[in-house]
Image 1 (cartoon, rainbow over the protein chains, first blue to last red):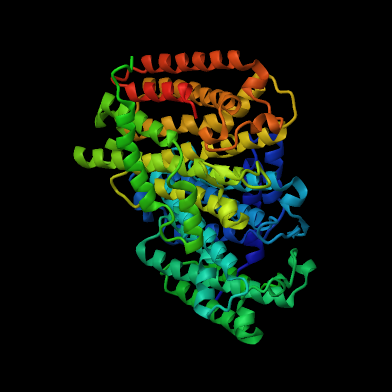
Image 2: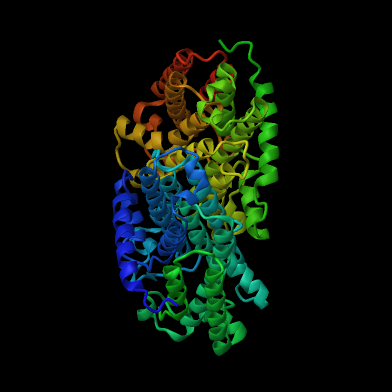
Length: 320
Length: 320
C-alpha cells in the first residue's frame, strides 16, 4: 500500500516547518533562565512523532475533502485562500502544541520525585542541567504555552477550530488522559496487572495524546463523521502499538540507541507488555495493532492516507 | 461608594456556586489517588478571590450592558434566554478555571524543590499528604483541567468566548505571566531589586492571573472597549496591591492567622515591598493602588461596580 511513499522526504519537509516554528515560538518573551530551560526541553531532539501525526491527519483529511469539508470553518464566511492559509496555520500550531505537551511531560517525568532519570534524547535531563525548580517551572510553562499556541489572535483560524483544539488537547493531557495514566503507572509499580489494566494505563498515559494528535489534525482539516470515526480507531491502535514497541525496545535495545536509559522498566519492577506476555507474543501483538491501524485507514473513505500508513509502520518497526 | 453594598452576602452567594461547581467537577473521571490529591488541593480552602473577581466583573459588565453588549455571542444567533444561560455558565466555568490555575501553582510552589513549605491553608501541603510525585501530577492535571473546563461541548457558550477565555488564561498562566514571574522570583533570592524590578516580578507572578480573572469575567459578559480598558487598569492596580499587602502581612501577621508560614520572605532573604520601601511606605503604597483601582472603576462607564469596588477594598484592608 504505502510502498512508493517517501516517508523520509515527507517527514523532512514537515519537520523542517515544525522545527522552525518551535524555534521561533518557544521561550519567546519568557524570562531568560526559564526561556532557556523551555527551549532546551523542546528543541533539537525527539522524533516529533506527534507533530507528524497531526500534519499527516490534516493532509489526509484536507486533500480528501478540500476546504469545503469544513462546515465549521466555512461558517466564518472567509474566501477559500484565506481559509486554506488559516487551516494550514492551525495545523502547524496544533502540531507544535502536542509536542509541547509531550515535552513538558518528559521534563516532569524525569524529575527525581518521578523516574529520576538523568539522560533524555542523549542529553542531561532538564533538572540536571537547570535545577529542579527551573525544570518544574519550565514544564508548567510549556503546558500553558501549548494552549496559548492554539488560541492566537488570528482571524483566519475560526474560533470554533481554536476551541475544539483546546478541548481535545486538554482532555488528552489531563486526569482522564496523560496525567491520569502517569498516576496509574505510579501506583502500579510492583503490582501484577492484567493485560486489560495495562492496556488502560497505556491508553491514558501515551495513547490519549497520540490519538489526540491524529484527531486535532483531523479537526483542522474539517473531517466528516466517517473519517473521524476511522481516524479515532487508527489513533487508538497506533497509540497502543507505540507503547507495546516501547516496552519491547526497553528490553532489546541499548541506552545509546534509545537516547535514554534502557532496561529501566525491569529495573524498577514496572509491569510491561513484555513482562506480561513475553517477548515474542508482544512483538506479534504489535503487528496485530499495526494491521488494525491500517484497516481503519482503509475504512476512512479518505483518498490519500499514505503518510498516516507509513507513520504507523514506522512506529511499529522502529529500532529506537 | 460601596458603603451600602453587602460584600459578605454577595460573596456567600457566589462562593456557594463556585464551591458546588468545583466539588462536582474536580477529580471527576481521574484515577482514585490522583483525583483525591486534586480535590485536596482545590476544595475546602482559600479565599477564592480570583473566582469572585471573575464573577464580579461578569456581573458589572453584564448588568451594565445586557446580553446585547456581546457582539460575538450574538453572532451565534441564539435567543436571549439561551444566550444568558450560556454566559452565566461561561462565567462560572471561568471562575473555577482561574482557581484551578491558582491551586496548581500553590501545589508546585510548595514542593521541596521550590519553597519547601509544609503548611497551606492550615493543612499539610499536597506533597506532604500525598507524596511529591502525586503532587507534581495533581498540579499538572489541574492545569489541563482548567482548559478543559473552558471548552465544554456546550453549544450555549459561543466558540469565540471559549477561545478567548483559553487565550486569556494561557497567557496569564505561562512564561509571560505566572510561571515567568515565579522564575524571576527564583532568580531574585538574595539580590537587591529596584522597585521597578520587584513590580515587574509581581506583575507576572500574581498580577497577571488576578488581572486575567477580571478580564475573563469581562469577556463572558461581552464588555465593550471602554469597559475593557478600565477593567484592565482596575485589574493591574488590584493585582499589584494584592502583592504589596501580602508582603506586609508576611511581616505583621502570624502563621495561624495566615494559614501558612509567616515571616518566610525575610527568612529566605526574598526581596519584598516591605524590605524595599519599609513598612509604613508599603502600607501607603497599597492605599494608593486601591485609589487607582477605584478610579478605574469610576471611568469604566459601567452602572454597578460595587462588588468590584468592595473586593478591591477587601484585598487591601484584609488581615490574612
